[in-house]
Length: 284
Image 1 (cartoon, rainbow, N blue to C red):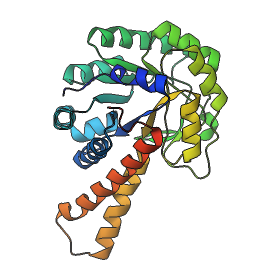
Image 2 (image 1 turned 90 degrees about the horizontal axis):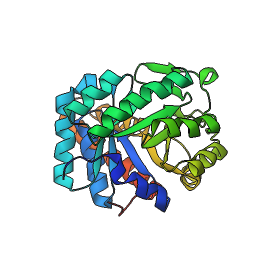
Image 3 (image 1 turned 90 degrees about the vertical axis):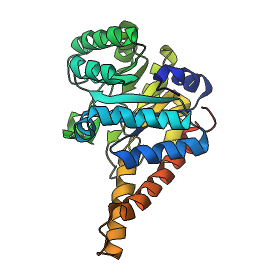
Image 4 (image 1 turned 180 degrees about the horizontal axis):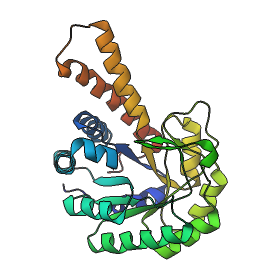
């Protein structure tokens, strides 16, 4: 099966009150773990790729790995640019074979965010590629971008609704109190904002910063209208903690396969738990 746009499964997710996971691909082991878990549970999913990951893996390798996973699994898989910083980056990914892109114009003024997002949507739609937009500023750290809590801004529902109406994005990430990275305490998620926006627009709301959010908050977010949830840090922690434990146990290991295999297995379990929590099992 070829890579698909998020429109192959996100409308169904919104209609049937489940969420599809975006699991970030940081290397081959991440990609393998994600698709293995999804195959076992028969779930659609999204490979998220940040610009930092693109620089690390190379765009050609990234697309080839995702295409191999889609062909092997037969699952509906979207390859999605995560937090694309410009029209140019989005177009580069589309030309390379990405089936979905995010344009993150949240650091621009509201009007400029709309203008730039509309340009991405127009070009992407001509290629059958889905687009995610973002409104508000999500705190935490992702790649080299750090936003402290003081400068994280919640999305205003009326602006989110107008943003969708003017851009026509296929899903909309709104800042509702989550953050990239792991939480020191529990996040303060504004479910009222999710519900108000979701009821007013036909496309799913996206929850960024899904790692470490308590299960009950995830369920409540989905019930309020979230149809896509991003997870990266939990996989990174599972991978790194496992590698550290293996090497601490046996300092003589030098074959990367000896520590990457258990690390990959640990990520499989993380992804399976998220798919089950999100309700996307057997939705492929």
